[in-house]
Length: 63
Image (cartoon, rainbow, N blue to C red; front, side, top):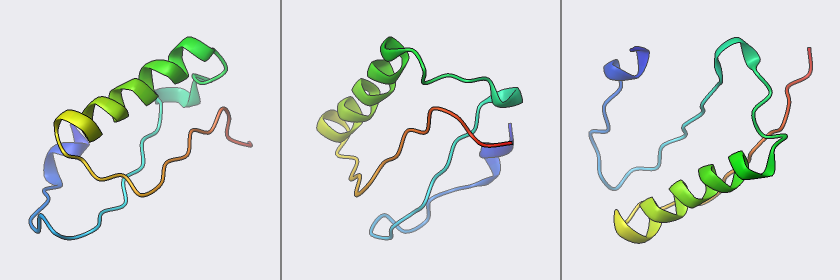
């Protein structure tokens, strides 16, 4: 996987992370998918001490 080559080396640094969906499949038009992603982030924030300063879920990307 392409993500295997990226490592966080400084635990105190800020990192920008972006995710894309294969073939630009429209994913976030369904509310239950959005809720699952947000719940996953919230779990990591609460249980794994992940610090999230901002997040943006885009329902579609212009061609």
